[in-house]
Image (cartoon, rainbow, N blue to C red; front, side, top):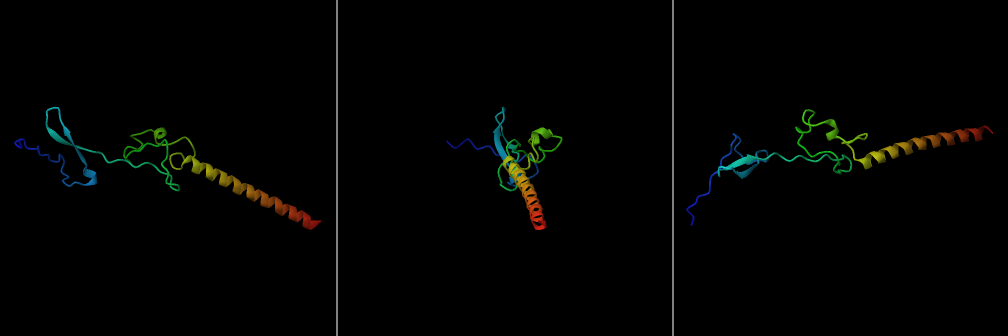
Length: 121
């Protein structure tokens, strides 16, 4: 029997288009009424800029929730140089690369000194 009609729903705000920023969910209230509840947009995870890998230990939040007033600094970052910006593996690789470059410079300098010594003899 099709005598029971579906309850109509209207937006509760002035924004009247079904866009990404106006997402809603149908919710039945304790009084038996159907109403729209507005859904927050999902945040995107922080990623490493070079490897595009998702950073562990950094919460997935909208920019407003990541603000200084909403969360503590320790909740937004990782305790490491470049924590919350670069992945641990990336930081390790950078440190190793910098160390090896410095070592290479020292080796070159030593070889130059030896060649000078050999040239004087």
